[in-house]
Image 1 (cartoon, rainbow, N blue to C red):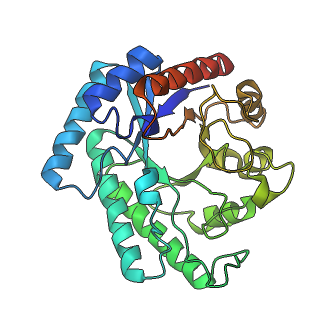
Image 2: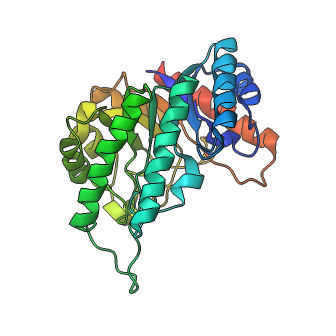
Image 3: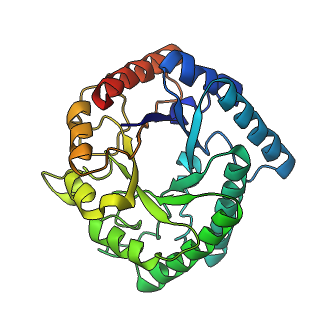
Length: 296
């Protein structure tokens, strides 16, 4: 099973292609990479973005890396994006993603994905079981336009990452299946990235929550998986040096049983910015070793 790493652990640390490319290949021992837009902001000026795209292509080739995809990252995720209550902000978020696609195409990265957005919370703090239909219809229309932008940029696929939040969409298997039907026939295929810290969130899905309903319910619409160590309580994104409820061998076996052996698995872990660099690198290195054994 293909194994790669999301560059989330590099944020505010190994910030340039010359730094992270060597690190991934020589220290962590992987060759499949998922860029995070926490390292490159699509809002930067075009001249700067064009230069960074060239650097990524050069360093990836130099170190024998495959640039599989790019995900929006935590900085952009912190905004309400395509579901912000102000349509002007939604327009900006859509334009930001179109610029992200342009950059990815220039850098030789064929896929871009991430969560899509979040509606605003109610004043009373109560959360509904579904976002308003008007917001959903607007989101689908924007996804169709974004597929056209991605195709124009030379991409091959776009990805949605379901999250365990009622304010975001989709957060259930049924919602994800409905969305897949509503964007069928778009200029590019929309597929799903599932995350072990999202589908297992027991406060939302109840005791016994797990990934099996997602794998069985979405099937080949799943194109990749994010793996992390977590406690099934919150979306932890711990590495595998910490105790938790995700067993790498069992996780990979479950994915294989559902016919998804070709879908790459990406280690996606986050660290406090105050943590020392040596322990971060050690945690990623040891986690990658455990996952390599599981994926063999």
